[in-house]
Image (cartoon, rainbow over the protein chains, first blue to last red):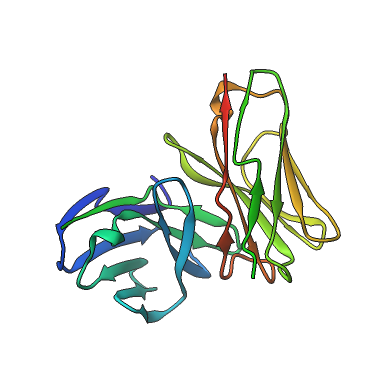
Length: 108
Length: 113
């Protein structure tokens, strides 16, 4: 069993829809990261959180430490949000363990 | 300010050769971490350097090595290349060690023939 599980693996949405990507992990962590990867490979760090909720523009990330679960929400989705979204956790060793990613496609 | 710079961006090698990849962090960042991304295994942590010292190492064979220089630039080396080493190699930098707010480079795409 992978330490970090993401769902769904693939997601297609219409422009304007509300999107949720889920991440579950099985080990104790010090922080959880949400990353965005566009075609060509570049990765952008969206959020790092260890508790509660963070918001940046149309993106919202939440984490429930007791349930070992995090969600990334995108409000009013846009085609430019199309990318792979990756959840990663850092534990006591402070190195990252990654989920397999969610391929999001937002259609105009 | 300049971002994280990785060179070369693309390279092709043959089995048995060795390769060196370079990563220049954002000015003022002293931590550099390296990652391998393949279609089969996804993203995996290779190692992290801080102040010229390796702080963490992932589960990779000894053919994978790295170092960090006094100006925080880092290199990683893969010796005796295998077909399975074909991957996108990404580095990320941070002000301090420990996977805080990472800034990633664009990656070096290695193809082993």
